[in-house]
Image (cartoon, rainbow, N blue to C red):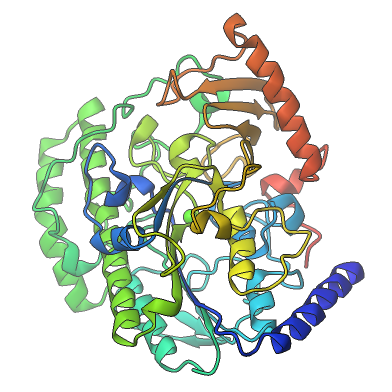
Length: 513
Ligand code: CA
């Protein structure tokens, strides 16, 4: 602990010296918009074949800047992903393995602390979800835990406050209000962190009829039978068929609506729910109905997120701030929109592994840039530190995206990526797994607590990831190479040889205070 504090002090002192030497330079503002569980399939710029939704405002960031097609997360779950973003380190080093029994160790180095120490005015508004209070922010106003969609209580710099309205709009309003109040002598780091479209996907009332009862195309893998793969995929609990609750399906209304809001809710859902109960669909028809309801609700939430992005971009335009502000849009992981019959995330498979990432950086990033390199939210901390003109701490484990944003991909840019998921058994019974990902392959080890087997996926032959080629003689050579590579990555990234039992969640508390 003492060595961690003293190394942080050394970095902070170096930054203080650096910032006073460069005080005359006009460093860019950073607007980092981060949503929760926003699947790239639900952003029109990513061109999902189902054409689920138009998101003109999020798309605008990419059109005026860059869209990244392969932004991978080290651990596809909310809290751990946020800890990765803040620290630029894998969960085995930042101490936040799962959402069940971890608390973020706020004594450690984070990019907001580094930016704040160097003279940025730092704020975070919205979802935090890391148990301990935010550190490194001049202003913070966060949802307690997961937060509520309607009339959400928040914690404003430590004080509990009430709000009336829809959470996404409130977070956007508060972000704009705080930008108006900012200290104009300093560059800002504004982290606008939306709760939406996290489960239970409760829509903004103004968008309840947004799709005019459109019927959405189904994903090809909606009725996946989980054959040709190991036990873990058969034993999960995250399907539309078995896991979805009446609350998820809006067959019961949330408790925290006021009278007027409840009337709007009932006017939309009651007649549709009555028709559903009367029709009483079964089997595949029931799954199909659930998929349609899920898409309606999830996409209505996304629509409000996109509205908010539009308002934030307009504020930057109106205030003349757009030219010197980097705008980043991302989410804490990807999400299943019915693929493999699922909702939720967690797996190393493409839909949950990939987060959306769009970045606008006027005069630096060429408008309309597309990037297919393997990047990660592990890289965000280093990128923000680099953008702020600060030295990148040697203990961060990502790579600054600044060269890529300039259109200059370094020759030695990563060709492989390490993934590691821990949380088990609750809430979705997805077994811990780690592995290595390349452009084409994924080699995975399902290793705990009651399984021990490998899988190999070949996305070129099998883009939907419906079968494991592990043990197939044609794949012997590539399997051996990937096994060497995963071990190399584990050593380089300092992954412990053995997990502690509390890494998975459950009752035992971690040692971190
Ligand atoms: Ca999440």
